[in-house]
Image (cartoon, rainbow, N blue to C red; front, side, top):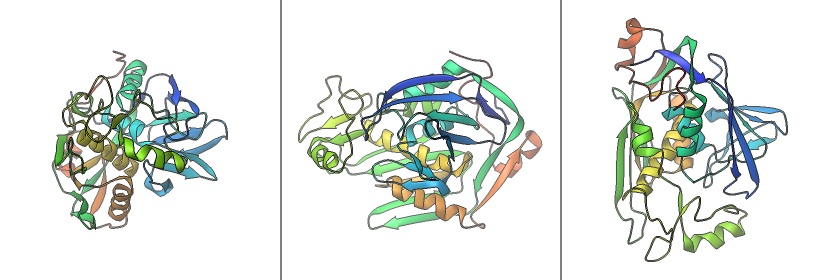
Length: 308
């Protein structure tokens, strides 16, 4: 059943892992938040709160990082994608260090955390960013375009320049548990040839076959193989969902992406927000407000009090 109200997690839940790039141990806790609070990252070791919005993006090299007052939280895109995909509007994401734990390299562990916590319905209607005019960013053969639509969908196309993953594409329309079924389990990936270069830059210190797909010149090195034949494109869709979640509210629009990454995704978000003619914000409290969205809100993945 569709819901027009904002939602938060019903109780505190935690997980522990390592940061993909820092290699440091990291503990993350999802905690309830009030209506209209949005998603906020809290550096518990520093006492700094960082709202999960595009204006606080400070780095997009290989992941999306947020910062405020000298404090940073890196690799936020997977947990942001999970919260968005599970219909969570307000949540405190508490971390004890500078990076979100990578866990298995996908968003699935974070969706499981939301399911463990359950969902609490809040006494305020959801706010949506409705795309009214197409907005795009281009850079050579790369493209990220957000255009009007009757819901929220993401399509991604790329040629990764590798015999195993040429001309891969994936498209999904969010709603009716689509994120859980089709996107959440897709893992991050890297090419073996790039690992030494990344580590020389101080990155990928926590990477392993347990939290990333690693590809050499001719094969997938992970013994279990792939979770989907097009897992690479699905993970790029996952990343894009997490990046667009930094609008600070659900989107009614379609993202078309070709070879885009975190930097281009965030540039697109910034460009949309800077153009009042391209978007509007609509608060929906019931069926009477629905026509302003040009779409019905899809049934959410989980319901109040569920902890399955």
